[in-house]
Amino acid sequence: MKALAASRRARVVVALGVVGAVALSTGPALAESSSSAGSPAAESSSSRDYGTPTAEPGKVCPFTGDIPVSVPAVNSPVGAPEVGVGGLSLPAPAVPSYLYGELCMSESSLASARDGKPPAVLVLVHGITYGTWYWDLPYESDTYSAVDYITKHGYATLNIDRLGEGRSDHPASALVTNDTNAETVHQLVQKLRGGEIGEIPFGHVGLVGHSYGTVTTWLETAKHNDADMVIGTGYGNRFKADAGVQLFSGLQPASTVPVTAGEPWALDPGYLQPRPGSRAEPLYNVENTDPGVMATDEKLANTVTAEELGLFAVREYDGTAKNIKIPTFLVNGEKDTIFCGPNEIACTTSGTTEDGPEALEEKAEALQQYEAPGFGPQACLRAASIPDMGHDTNLHLNAQQTFAQIVYFADQAMGTGGEKSADYRANCATGRPSLSDRLPETGRVVPPTDLLGS
Image (cartoon, rainbow, N blue to C red; front, side):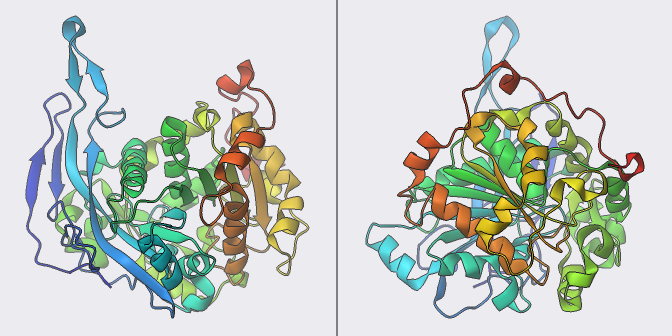
């Protein structure tokens, strides 16, 4: 069920002169579906085989392919007017593009959808240097496929490659930013609700992100609040400075890494690729990781743009997350050295690898208290720490604890058919908004670092 690999043809799209952006795309803007849904199709922008969607008895993927989107060339919602000279309004400039996605569910869920009763769908958004395979690992998928776990529990999933990654379009790196990631995911939410993906209109949509995917889903939500709920994993409102230096020092221009050097977009110096052998320590608790998983990670590693790295931490300090007004859950690994505060104090837990999701939430007081100041009461923030797990919460030996936590919250905040969404959202607020809930948090101004201790 792979998107059709194809001969590439370059096209150059010149954005409106107000920004002077030139986007180099490596394929046509529409993707070809592998299903009978009749959706328009596109050639993938990458010739690499990422091994997704994985095969699993009872799992079907009625759509796999490229989904047309518009990439905004200014820092505003797509289509929003920009005030011009003398009060004139100009349409926000945007570049036509596409995201690769895989819509999957169980056979029974698809049958119900065809009968007019679609399941709730979770949009799965990976972090930097990853892709669809983060959520559907083509290695021992019985253990490491979140897609398989979630679809077996009655939900549909839309597993995507973010803009500039994997089989999605690679426009000029300057156009791949926090905001363009958020706006393209926003378009996916609207397309799912409108029945434009797989010809199934989904009445209930949840967002699930990992790491930079959580940056994306939180920003999308802060701007639009158009999903039923949002789940973040491997992230937090304070990025640890010394861990960031270690993580980013493993990146180099994509044109200098053999696996991506031949790609046309790699000539853009803003596209970065992990240096071989640089991923293990920042992303894993190695003692709790299958070497085969890390080998698969190394083989499939993807890109990130300099623009994405340069600005994302600003959102942690400007109060963005306080605009989130839908139910929110955060899942972090106990030994995440990037987002758990000095010496990982924020993710401390007495939980064990035998605990279920309710117990892990109850034992995550430290994470709940650490992150709560960054949110308002309408986010109804809840949290869980997963024991013995590093940053990549899907790729440790106890990955199923992460998947169980996702389903646990989705079942409460939305339900497999969306039947619980309205009641949960109406009753979950932790208090009435106050002035402090509209202002940036000022209690943690200095970025956390192990150098300052706990």
